[in-house]
Length: 182
Image: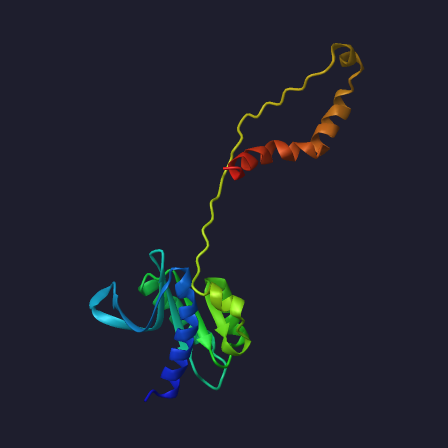
């Protein structure tokens, strides 16, 4: 027979197993070797493995909202075990301070009372971004004018027009669009 905290962990484990259809391996009560002390195993409530990424899920079945101290412990555990992410699941919610700390350091909070199906499906899911950086040095812009219009050209007005012309942005966005088409 399981006690209440274990039953809570198993309930969260069952929820996490919804991820298995997306290629995730979900395990309950896993023991992971500590990279700094390999002979010592660290107990993890739930481990989610997907695409060589490890997400730790820690559960708390308490009557009071969880505070900053627990969030800081989870931050340390994520760093120590070299996990890619950590999710804190509480049956009673989180204090304002815990929410702020978690948001600042990327600890995902799940309040079981406010959990939606969409949130569950995203647990432990990583997002990959590709960032393109373009740097322009000594940019030269060539303008072509009809030969007859050059004597009538007001250079100062032209400078103002070029500075405020919305089309200038498209010159710099163009390389991005060509990468989007790939």
